Every structure is written in C-alpha cells, then in structure tokens.
Length: 281
Ligand code: HEM
Image (cartoon, rainbow, N blue to C red):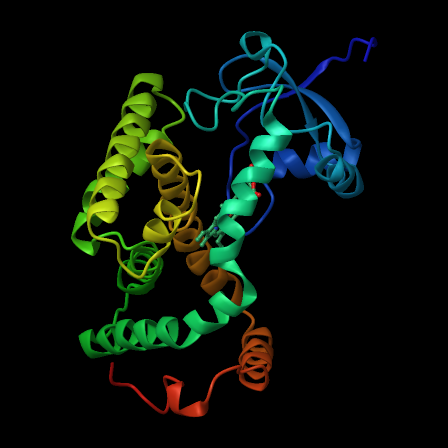
C-alpha cells in the first residue's frame, strides 16, 4: 500500500476485563477496519479489526506464517515461536499440507469420539476431588490445568510425571519479552521430543507419538517436532479456554443450562459411561 498512514496505536492494549475486548481496540474498531500500529517491540505493522476483513485474510492462501524476507518482517514480540515469521516461504504450503496429512489420521472425528468417555471419566474424578476439598474451590488448579495435561499425555504417550518440566519449557518458549529464554525453552522442548521419539522407537505404545514414529518416511526429528507441536498446542490453549468458558457461563445460567441440554441430547456414547452414572474409573 503506497499511502502513508499515521500510527493509530501502540501494542499491547491494556486489557481491563478478560471477557471484554480491550477498550482501545474497541475504539479502533469503531473508527475503521485496518490500522497502522506499532508492535510491542517497536515495529510498524497492520492491525485488522473488521470481522469480514479478518475472515477474508484468514481464507486467503497468500497469507501464512512465513515471509519472503523474514529479516525485514515486522515482529510482534521476542518469542522465537510467536514473535516473527516461521517456516520457509518457498515451501510453506507443501510443509503445511504434509503436517496436516501426518496429523489428520490421529484426530479424525471417530478418534475424538472414542476419547469422549475417557475425558468424561477424568473430568468426573477431578470434579469429585474438587468437591471433596470443600469451598472455596479453585477450578483453575483443580480442573482447568490438570485435565488438558492428563488428556494430551495419554493421547501422545507422554509421562504425566514430566508435566512440571515440559510446562516450564512451554512457558519459556512462549516468553514474549526475553528472546534467549524463548529460544532456550524451544530447544529444551525439542530435545525432550527427541528423547520421547527414541523411547517410542525402542518400545512403541498405543499412542500418537508411537504411531507417528511408525509412519513411513517420518524421520526422528520430524516425529519429535510434530510431537512437541502437539504437546504445546494441545494443553495451554485448553487450560485457558476452560477458565474463560466458566467465567463466561457463570453470570449467564440460562446459557449454561442450554449448553447442558445440548450436550445431553448429543451424548454420543452409552449412558453407562456418563460421569453421572459411572463415577468410578
Ligand atoms: C480450546 C483449545 C484450543 C484453542 C483455542 C486452539 C487454537 C488454535 C489456533 C488459533 C490455531 C491456529 C494457529 C495458527 O494458524 O497460527 C490452532 C492450530 C492448531 N492447533 Fe489448536 N487450539 C486448541 C486446542 C488444540 C488441541 C487440544 C490440539 C491437539 C491435540 C491442537 C492442535 C493444533 C494444531 C496441530 C494446529 C495447527 C493446525 C494447522 O495449522 O493446520 N489445538 N489452534
């Protein structure tokens, strides 16, 4: 775009309420759909605030995570993972298609449906423990944190005892202020992925990492990278979402009830597996 635009805002925006759009962002939204902003590390960038425009951009194959000249690209922060472009511009489309084709078989609707009863059982156990402890209950530490970690550990075949370690590395890798810390976390995670792959090659289990290792043409490093990507993408996201979901539903009991009703009517597994009917595991 050849037209120079004034800098409309400095990132990050102050977030006064986790359930509401930041006030400064709302204000920009009311003024237009595309803005010139300065990122937290001082680079100029575009911020798109219009829903239709965002949707069109996400649908557009010309947009991706890589950049033809990464050293010149605007950066959003210091994280080695989220701060700057990722991947190879020349091969991104093919690399992404390969990642999807390798992961898709393990995350089909059939596979995920088969996981439902187990997730229900784990949830029931955690809720029972929370109830036993009496008020005040801490949903975050009692359910939101352990549940996604238990599920992703079982799915991938990662030892649950390693959770403190890989969570610390995940947090380091995601650090948006300290580049060296972020790179260290990422390197530790990758080393951990390589260790897991070595174990699974020696002693395969009934889990996604073992199955990735057994897939023809998948090298140790590719299996390690995919395993770590899943471990990373598969737990912190869900931890946050459980907390936000609870916060959103608490002041709206009618929406909570509608969700309970919809879930009950869509129950895809036998009632004997439901946590209300079968609390033991
Ligand atoms: C509520 C929880 C979750 C949220 C909010 C979430 C959010 C997202 C978002 C926004 C992306 C797109 C990122 C981008 O394109 O830059 C993404 C991609 C991805 N997520 Fe999640 N995610 C969640 C749970 C999970 C879980 C449980 C797993 C795995 C077990 C997972 C695996 C992935 C993978 C593999 C990708 C890359 C997909 C692709 O590029 O084709 N996510 N997720």
